[in-house]
Image (cartoon, rainbow, N blue to C red; front, side):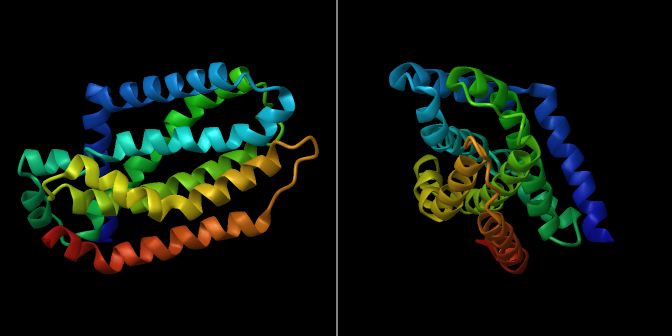
Amino acid sequence: MSLFSNTAVLLSKELRTEFRSRELLTTTVVFILVVLILFSFAISPTTEESREFGPGLLWLAILFAASLMLQPCFLREQNNDTLSSLRLAVSDPFSIFLAKLIANTLFLLLTELIMLPFFAIFYNVPVLPEFHWLLLVLSLGSLGISIAGTALSAISAQARMRELLLPLLLLPLLTPVLVVSATVTVSLFERVPIVKGKGIAFLGVFDVVFLTALWLFGEYLLEE
């Protein structure tokens, strides 16, 4: 119970901090919209091209947003020297990671929900018919990105070239998630939508495996 109570307290701190300033969300939303607009004007896709290439551009924009959002995840605690205080305040160090990855997932999903209507307009792709499946794919993909990104953010926050280290570590690790998420999304945008169960199952397994690894080795990441 201490894990969940500590996580709830830390999660409320993360949410209050972000919604009080709204700097990260505002910057990420503006950035991701600019990326989508630039892609739409640069490619000028037809309807068929949008169904084929749109999902890849969508997840590329999500990757850009995640990289921007995850960078200051542990950097704030490092700069303010509060990470040591948090470790002393909680009985289970995993609650620190759990609160941050839940907050990162919620922020990323909120950004994606804001982005979807603009994506549908700019690329002429209907998102409502299979919205429930699309939301599931976005949730699983965002969770996987947040788990890996939160762990790597804890590592890179203590490095000298932290701004460069996180993207270098994050991109290779998230390649399977992005490829599978884009493939499943393509099948949902086809004229006759197809739900690829194997792809969704892969995303679920990825999330469980990496979450378990974070639970097992999270304390060591905070110590290094």
